[in-house]
Amino acid sequence: MAYRFLCAAALVAVALAGVVGAAPAAEPRQDQDILKHAVVCPPFKGDPTLAAVYHNELVKILRESPAVELYEGTRQLPDFYFRVNGSIVTNEDNQFFVLVTVFDDERKEQLASHVAPATLDPEAILGWTRLLQADIARRGSRLPFECRISRKLGQESITLDRGLGSGLKPGMVLYVSEDEEPLLSPVTGAIIGRDSPRAAGQIQVFRVLDETAYARPVMNTKLPRTAKLFARSF
Image (cartoon, rainbow, N blue to C red; front, side):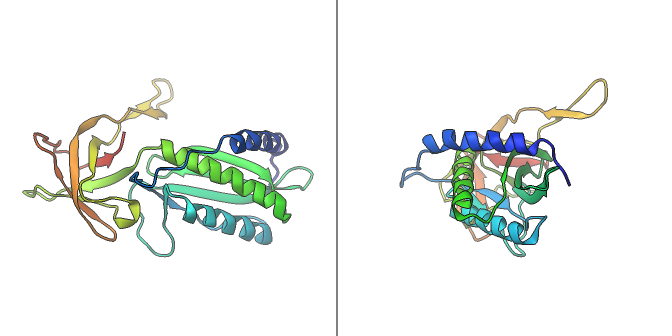
Protein backbone atom coordinates (compact mmCIF):
# COMPACT_ATOMS: atom_id res chain seq x y z
CA MET A 1 0.00 0.00 0.00
CA ALA A 2 1.32 3.45 -0.88
CA TYR A 3 1.24 6.34 1.59
CA ARG A 4 2.07 9.70 0.04
CA PHE A 5 2.47 11.37 3.43
CA LEU A 6 5.16 8.98 4.66
CA CYS A 7 8.22 10.79 3.28
CA ALA A 8 7.22 14.11 4.80
CA ALA A 9 6.13 12.48 8.05
CA ALA A 10 9.41 10.60 8.27
CA LEU A 11 11.33 13.85 7.99
CA VAL A 12 9.23 15.30 10.82
CA ALA A 13 9.92 12.19 12.91
CA VAL A 14 13.66 12.50 12.32
CA ALA A 15 13.55 16.16 13.33
CA LEU A 16 11.59 15.30 16.47
CA ALA A 17 14.14 12.62 17.33
CA GLY A 18 16.71 15.30 17.99
CA VAL A 19 14.31 17.22 20.21
CA VAL A 20 13.25 14.16 22.18
CA GLY A 21 16.82 12.93 22.48
CA ALA A 22 17.93 16.31 23.82
CA ALA A 23 15.45 16.17 26.70
CA PRO A 24 14.87 12.54 27.77
CA ALA A 25 12.12 11.74 30.23
CA ALA A 26 13.16 12.02 33.86
CA GLU A 27 14.05 8.73 35.49
CA PRO A 28 11.64 7.78 38.29
CA ARG A 29 12.99 7.82 41.83
CA GLN A 30 13.91 4.42 43.21
CA ASP A 31 11.47 4.90 46.12
CA GLN A 32 8.60 5.99 43.87
CA ASP A 33 5.75 3.53 43.32
CA ILE A 34 5.04 3.12 39.61
CA LEU A 35 1.70 1.86 38.35
CA LYS A 36 2.10 0.20 34.96
CA HIS A 37 -0.13 0.43 31.92
CA ALA A 38 -1.30 -2.82 30.36
CA VAL A 39 0.06 -3.08 26.81
CA VAL A 40 -0.21 -5.65 24.03
CA CYS A 41 1.97 -5.61 20.90
CA PRO A 42 0.82 -7.97 18.11
CA PRO A 43 3.31 -9.06 15.41
CA PHE A 44 4.03 -6.38 12.82
CA LYS A 45 2.48 -6.66 9.37
CA GLY A 46 4.22 -6.20 6.02
CA ASP A 47 7.64 -7.29 4.74
CA PRO A 48 8.45 -10.35 6.90
CA THR A 49 12.14 -9.60 7.49
CA LEU A 50 11.73 -5.94 8.41
CA ALA A 51 8.51 -6.62 10.35
CA ALA A 52 10.26 -9.22 12.54
CA VAL A 53 13.24 -6.94 13.26
CA TYR A 54 11.16 -3.91 14.27
CA HIS A 55 8.62 -5.93 16.23
CA ASN A 56 11.39 -7.59 18.25
CA GLU A 57 12.95 -4.20 18.98
CA LEU A 58 9.65 -2.73 20.14
CA VAL A 59 8.91 -5.72 22.34
CA LYS A 60 12.29 -5.22 24.03
CA ILE A 61 11.48 -1.56 24.62
CA LEU A 62 8.10 -2.40 26.15
CA ARG A 63 9.52 -5.16 28.37
CA GLU A 64 12.13 -2.76 29.75
CA SER A 65 9.82 0.22 30.24
CA PRO A 66 9.08 0.85 33.95
CA ALA A 67 5.61 2.19 33.03
CA VAL A 68 4.50 -0.86 31.01
CA GLU A 69 3.21 -4.32 31.87
CA LEU A 70 3.47 -6.17 28.57
CA TYR A 71 0.83 -8.87 28.07
CA GLU A 72 2.22 -11.75 26.04
CA GLY A 73 1.10 -15.26 25.18
CA THR A 74 -2.36 -16.37 26.30
CA ARG A 75 -2.74 -14.09 29.32
CA GLN A 76 -6.24 -12.64 29.62
CA LEU A 77 -6.21 -8.93 28.91
CA PRO A 78 -7.78 -6.49 31.37
CA ASP A 79 -10.52 -4.10 30.24
CA PHE A 80 -8.19 -1.11 30.00
CA TYR A 81 -5.11 -1.63 27.86
CA PHE A 82 -3.16 -0.06 25.03
CA ARG A 83 -2.62 -1.86 21.74
CA VAL A 84 0.62 -1.01 19.95
CA ASN A 85 0.24 -1.91 16.28
CA GLY A 86 3.09 -1.89 13.80
CA SER A 87 3.48 -2.45 10.08
CA ILE A 88 6.03 -2.10 7.30
CA VAL A 89 4.55 -0.04 4.47
CA THR A 90 5.84 1.48 1.22
CA ASN A 91 5.39 4.82 -0.54
CA GLU A 92 4.96 5.48 -4.26
CA ASP A 93 8.71 4.99 -4.77
CA ASN A 94 8.62 1.55 -3.10
CA GLN A 95 10.66 2.80 -0.13
CA PHE A 96 10.04 0.97 3.14
CA PHE A 97 8.75 2.70 6.27
CA VAL A 98 7.88 1.43 9.73
CA LEU A 99 4.54 2.71 11.03
CA VAL A 100 3.63 2.39 14.72
CA THR A 101 0.27 3.40 16.21
CA VAL A 102 -1.00 3.31 19.79
CA PHE A 103 -4.68 2.68 20.52
CA ASP A 104 -6.72 2.93 23.70
CA ASP A 105 -8.58 -0.31 23.05
CA GLU A 106 -11.42 0.30 25.55
CA ARG A 107 -12.32 3.69 24.06
CA LYS A 108 -11.37 2.82 20.48
CA GLU A 109 -9.21 5.93 20.20
CA GLN A 110 -5.82 6.36 18.54
CA LEU A 111 -3.44 8.13 20.92
CA ALA A 112 -0.24 8.35 18.90
CA SER A 113 1.46 7.40 15.66
CA HIS A 114 5.06 7.35 14.51
CA VAL A 115 6.58 6.75 11.08
CA ALA A 116 10.24 6.38 10.08
CA PRO A 117 12.28 4.85 7.25
CA ALA A 118 12.59 1.07 7.66
CA THR A 119 16.04 -0.37 7.15
CA LEU A 120 18.31 -3.15 8.42
CA ASP A 121 21.09 -0.65 9.17
CA PRO A 122 21.98 -1.08 12.90
CA GLU A 123 22.60 2.64 13.48
CA ALA A 124 19.23 3.61 11.99
CA ILE A 125 17.45 0.97 14.08
CA LEU A 126 19.24 2.21 17.20
CA GLY A 127 18.08 5.77 16.50
CA TRP A 128 14.51 4.55 16.02
CA THR A 129 14.72 2.56 19.26
CA ARG A 130 15.91 5.55 21.27
CA LEU A 131 13.12 7.72 19.87
CA LEU A 132 10.47 5.15 20.76
CA GLN A 133 11.96 4.64 24.24
CA ALA A 134 11.76 8.36 24.99
CA ASP A 135 8.23 8.67 23.62
CA ILE A 136 6.94 5.67 25.58
CA ALA A 137 8.55 6.96 28.79
CA ARG A 138 7.01 10.41 28.29
CA ARG A 139 3.52 9.14 27.49
CA GLY A 140 3.63 6.47 30.19
CA SER A 141 4.37 9.06 32.86
CA ARG A 142 1.47 11.29 31.77
CA LEU A 143 -1.33 8.80 31.17
CA PRO A 144 -3.38 7.85 34.24
CA PHE A 145 -3.40 4.26 35.44
CA GLU A 146 -6.80 2.63 34.99
CA CYS A 147 -8.33 -0.74 35.86
CA ARG A 148 -11.81 -2.22 35.98
CA ILE A 149 -13.37 -2.92 39.37
CA SER A 150 -16.28 -5.16 40.30
CA ARG A 151 -18.29 -5.91 43.41
CA LYS A 152 -20.54 -8.73 44.51
CA LEU A 153 -23.84 -7.85 46.10
CA GLY A 154 -23.53 -7.58 49.88
CA GLN A 155 -19.72 -7.50 49.90
CA GLU A 156 -17.67 -4.51 50.96
CA SER A 157 -14.49 -5.62 49.20
CA ILE A 158 -13.86 -4.70 45.57
CA THR A 159 -12.03 -6.77 42.94
CA LEU A 160 -9.56 -5.11 40.53
CA ASP A 161 -8.61 -6.75 37.22
CA ARG A 162 -4.88 -6.02 37.59
CA GLY A 163 -2.36 -7.77 39.81
CA LEU A 164 1.26 -7.83 40.90
CA GLY A 165 2.68 -7.01 37.47
CA SER A 166 0.84 -3.69 37.44
CA GLY A 167 2.76 -2.34 40.43
CA LEU A 168 -0.26 -2.36 42.76
CA LYS A 169 0.65 -2.69 46.44
CA PRO A 170 -1.33 -2.94 49.68
CA GLY A 171 -2.03 0.52 51.06
CA MET A 172 -2.27 2.26 47.69
CA VAL A 173 -5.27 4.58 47.26
CA LEU A 174 -7.04 4.97 43.91
CA TYR A 175 -9.96 7.08 42.77
CA VAL A 176 -13.15 5.48 41.50
CA SER A 177 -14.91 6.79 38.40
CA GLU A 178 -17.93 5.84 36.36
CA ASP A 179 -17.53 5.11 32.64
CA GLU A 180 -17.56 8.35 30.67
CA GLU A 181 -20.56 9.22 28.54
CA PRO A 182 -19.80 9.55 24.81
CA LEU A 183 -20.25 13.04 23.32
CA LEU A 184 -22.31 12.86 20.14
CA SER A 185 -22.40 15.32 17.26
CA PRO A 186 -25.85 16.94 17.06
CA VAL A 187 -25.50 16.95 13.27
CA THR A 188 -24.16 13.48 12.40
CA GLY A 189 -24.71 11.56 15.62
CA ALA A 190 -21.10 10.36 15.52
CA ILE A 191 -18.99 10.11 18.68
CA ILE A 192 -16.76 13.19 18.79
CA GLY A 193 -15.32 12.73 22.27
CA ARG A 194 -16.08 11.59 25.79
CA ASP A 195 -17.03 13.26 29.03
CA SER A 196 -14.08 13.78 31.37
CA PRO A 197 -13.76 11.18 34.16
CA ARG A 198 -14.92 12.43 37.56
CA ALA A 199 -13.94 10.93 40.88
CA ALA A 200 -16.82 9.28 42.76
CA GLY A 201 -14.82 8.20 45.79
CA GLN A 202 -11.64 6.44 46.81
CA ILE A 203 -10.60 2.85 47.47
CA GLN A 204 -7.56 1.43 49.26
CA VAL A 205 -5.84 -1.75 48.12
CA PHE A 206 -5.37 -4.36 50.85
CA ARG A 207 -4.32 -7.51 48.93
CA VAL A 208 -2.59 -8.13 45.59
CA LEU A 209 -2.36 -11.46 43.75
CA ASP A 210 -0.80 -12.41 40.40
CA GLU A 211 -3.70 -11.31 38.18
CA THR A 212 -6.06 -9.52 40.53
CA ALA A 213 -6.17 -7.28 43.58
CA TYR A 214 -8.67 -6.43 46.32
CA ALA A 215 -9.60 -3.08 47.83
CA ARG A 216 -12.12 -1.44 50.16
CA PRO A 217 -13.75 2.00 50.07
CA VAL A 218 -11.90 4.47 52.26
CA MET A 219 -13.67 5.91 55.30
CA ASN A 220 -16.82 7.94 54.49
CA THR A 221 -16.78 6.81 50.84
CA LYS A 222 -20.01 5.42 49.39
CA LEU A 223 -19.51 4.17 45.86
CA PRO A 224 -22.14 4.50 43.10
CA ARG A 225 -24.36 1.48 42.54
CA THR A 226 -23.67 1.35 38.80
CA ALA A 227 -21.89 -1.77 37.58
CA LYS A 228 -19.54 0.13 35.22
CA LEU A 229 -16.90 1.47 37.57
CA PHE A 230 -13.16 1.73 37.22
CA ALA A 231 -10.27 2.81 39.40
CA ARG A 232 -7.70 5.32 38.22
CA SER A 233 -4.98 7.72 39.25
CA PHE A 234 -5.63 11.37 38.37
